[in-house]
Length: 420
Image (tube, rainbow, N blue to C red; front, top):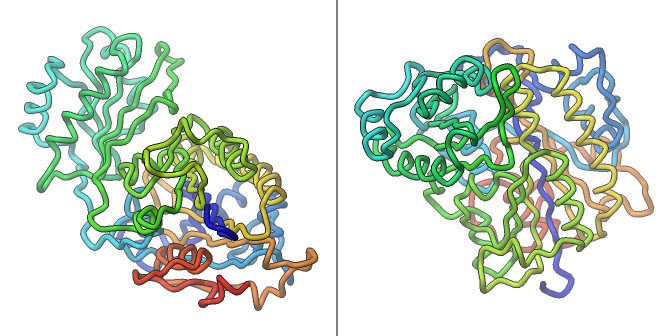
């Protein structure tokens, strides 16, 4: 690591919107969607003391989270520029890449010629479902038939995804992963879906459990360089935690580790901040040192376990869990660390259906350097306002690290990152 090099820690609370975007109706969503506020209202309030101190309640009214005259972080909200409301477009835009063309969707299932080619090339004998579905409901519906026939369950959602679910007691993981690789090769051209997802599960009817730690996403690679690539080109280590490795198809990452739960991802993040992680076992680029300057963590439970399932209580519980870990993370940070908390899209658990919601996402930026002597900032100074584009996050990281950034977006530090 360079002498006096700064670190950036990015925590993506997956599916955590903070109010309907101006074009929400064009994406099939209500102007009343607001993942954070509606969840808190439905639960009679949320207690998130760490995020409260960082200014979360100043971005929008959240029952149980106070609006403060002074807070410890810079706060605001980001409006997505990309044509989509999915994981891939959201994360890519955070790293400076706007997607103008939406990935294809399949509300009526996949074309029969694609399914026939998949069956032939995999040798799986047949498939079940081929329709949009909830990941848990489809297991209850077809889990026993899958066990009887051995046919994989193929389904999609409101996202551009080709999902393959198999019981590990019926189909082993190497076979499931091979089938996903075949599907990824087939799904190109006009059918170039954003992600093929391996969805292994175990158990019996009424007691199925999806195995998040063994999930794999086979994504389309970013079409252009992102901030991650620029950092890696300059021998700046980037550590992806959770599904970051899959979203970026390993591009721009020096190290990566999959996770099964939010708690695991948060623990890995804390260990990386404090230097307790042996990063050599997570290395993707042999020529890179194990020192890292950027930690990029996706916390998926809010989205996959609770948002899509419209589980309001579970969503609120996940936020409380994250807030507890944030207290430890903030206390472990060095003066020259920058923590950014944001999201890739909304997933309002109070909204109809099971799909993502087109929303603004929160932006919270904290560094001990912002609050010397533990003195909080006046909310006027801390408020960075409503920003057009998630790419302001990439510009802010580049500014903080004093890395030349010629991409889209404007730093919330307004060119002062290297001088704080």
